[in-house]
Length: 129
Image (tube, rainbow, N blue to C red; front, side, top):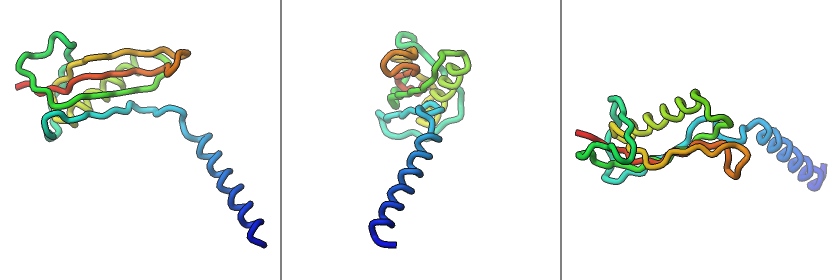
């Protein structure tokens, strides 16, 4: 085989592998994705229960230890998807070392709109005494 034939076969094989990977991967992540940006250093993870507060009812003596941003793609705003979303939020709070979450923004963008079918949560990870 000459060099041109081997190159063509290699390119075609790479394209076939790429197409197989593209067809088998989901379009959106199937689990909630997020990040906690630490504000006052890094705290060790905790195992206690997490309390969720709205922006007005957080404890006065709470210390903000991070900012949480969380996204979850789902085509329906069902109870099951909301439970998965809230469980992911509490896990992120625990991993950041907090025992509370003060929700700043939480909303669902329905399918059919730009960036539709997504739950979004932004909040402050807090540590109460």
